[in-house]
Image (cartoon, rainbow, N blue to C red):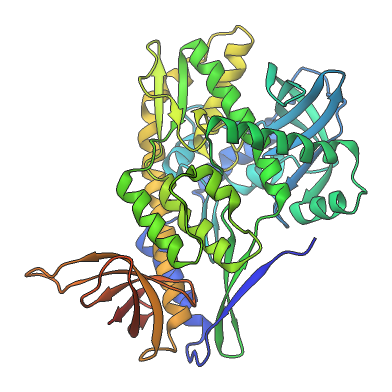
Length: 481
């Protein structure tokens, strides 16, 4: 299966790629993002790896495989699927990160400070030292690893009938990329487990549809510089990515159910989108040529978008605005008033990416204790009230990193076109005040860029605008009518 790619080519861009690289580096500096780990953290991580003992439970003789982006080395999950007489069995192994992080130690403190692995256009800032995240804890192929192994019995419709969770030894048989799995499934050469990934994934997507949920598989975007021109390259998500994501969602929903029943834990919650957010999104996707009928729920609309066309990919990217307001809700004893993650349309918890997200380590330990009738460790309970704040801080940094990077990249795309006219649609408008002129936000149709505009505009109207500023160094893009 080929991967649809959109190239938005900007002619006459006289800027060298080094300017964008320098700007992205400055974004890191402004956010005070670390370039390395403190020596104390590295020493403790190395000692944890040296002294690590595999779980006492014997090796599970399950032919796990990992499925990740090309070149990934921090492998959080391994999966194997089986057909049964009345449904399916899902084996899902999650990296044994808690065994490498001493509660209250230097690695723990640094992870709480970072919160999550941050992804920037010019590289990533990992949550844990690579000796853990890309080495001893990563579920790399052909080596024995400790893992938290979830086992789900599913009925014929892929509903969860029973759940088990235990620490055990596993061995991944192979590391796949998404592209490799998609090709082998499409060619008819996949083994039963991979074929079941599609079968179970599609049934879980149908269950998501029935409960009113919505998955957002955003396109990957990269900025490239060729022959004096910047290019924006978008890659449409492959179907296997959605099928694989459903296994993770299934696990997160199960984790939430376990913690709610045990009356202790931490959920990922999110409210329904606000009315003004929905209207802004409606106008934006209409400008892209993908109108959203009012009688169709937003989850159903997102599933209908063409993922092999530029306009559909851009609309999916814009849909991120509908998924704002997410947070974490910790509880111990009294259940929280709000437990739903609106996009999932069910209670949900983060638990499948402990190498890359702080919260998952605590959820794993909590669920493993509860499901096996053991007390939740005191260090977990003591941390629960602090985790929402730590994750909120980290999410804020990730959001600022993304926005600043996008601003710089969009300025780079347009940097050689100052003075040119573009077609656009007005997404929102604001009247003039004593402090600023009238203007608003526009969506260009080619290239697909959202930017500010000055002038008298009305939301929803199509306009012809002139690019006045495209400054890579400041990430500033401004148009005038």
